[in-house]
Image (cartoon, rainbow, N blue to C red; front, top):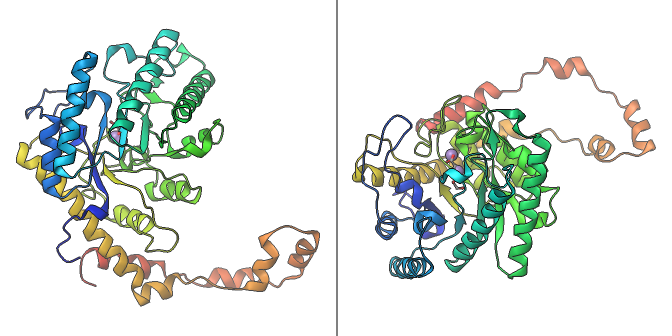
Length: 390
Ligand code: GCO
Ligand code: MN
Ligand code: MN
């Protein structure tokens, strides 16, 4: 893999809203022109990406007529076909229009909730028509500033009602589509409900069709909250619920920066890739590697493509590093865990016999405590792999 050039089999995808981001921020307008979606797809294909994802309104304007919608979609399908690109994931814009200023599925106004469900049904139809297999729910506006406006338990119930309604809609239409829920602690709301991947994982277990619903964790969102992204992803994988992933980069404690993948936190990115690629053991994640990030506001269009190529190249470089790290004999020796099958048998499951036998075991806590674990050496080896001297 010495060129690190992206291949279709890498399953790299970008959102229309990511490479199409015109550089707007809360303090200033766009620094580059808004690009036509068909142009973005062609350029992504040239860069070596496999897929393009979209919100309904990234492609079809909010107030388009039915015939405008159909002609926009027909042209887009032709572009996908010509450029050999696929749409693996779709989602709904439930945050831009002012009607959603106090939430969509969790709004106190039943008309807003009904409108949000209807808009999502239409956007699901659009996604399925374009071939999407995963449907993402990011509840950016589902939160509060004045928290007394609703009982947060009511918000949870309303969100559940919406998920149950929409999973049933998918089943009723025999669509081959699963849902991936994306958590974020804050921004644009002061506090967003279901703030972490862990909150989402539990919520999913309360849904009518929980088998259709997983998570879409994002590097930036867990990092903003100061949490370990690899740990959140690992828990989702262990539960069989990693349905999609939003890759980017982020400094702890800042606003949602959505930086180029691997740019701020190569070590965390390496730890993440070890999990996703299965180099540290366990099953490999087989879904899309989606970059939900955008180019710095300082960039013109060329900088946007530098950004996109950079995300994919860094992923592939780190993938090679992950393979090398996990195959390094010194690393393997350091992380090889102690084995004591007879003792492990006793704690694997409870029985009164096991409990009694456990009490008779000789375990020298002081001797165990005196022994160093070699993790300084282990971490130094990781740094040396990252810095390219090993
Ligand atoms: C954000 C989110 C979004 C979502 C996207 C798809 O913080 O802006 O990450 O980019 O991922 O809306 O649901
Ligand atoms: Mn995201
Ligand atoms: Mn984000």
